[in-house]
Image (tube, rainbow, N blue to C red; front, top):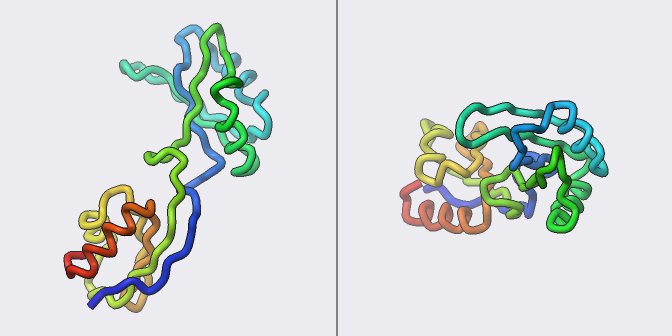
Length: 157
């Protein structure tokens, strides 16, 4: 039967250096945004997305280190940048904003188990990486990992 082999963590999600930038006013040009966002301490990359739907324009920024992204998030209420007369909103890109994630290894999986099956039973937000020999590395929040452990104990994952 499948079981939990090991747990590692905590760790942030896919890229702890990346932040989402919203509330971009329609009058803000790309040049305005680049100037404003690159002025933030530690920003190394900016990606602007112009969206014609109701959701509006948005951007992503990457910092040189997770610590610089964290520092920006801690001061965002008082230091959120302003661009073309609109205060920008910076948020974590993760669905579970700034929630630490852990890694867990599941062993003794049936040989025909797929990552898709694991994601379906454990939740779409769970990252799954299958390894040879019937094991899988999953990365998720502590709450999701607890749910995964219960499903595995019950033989439903």
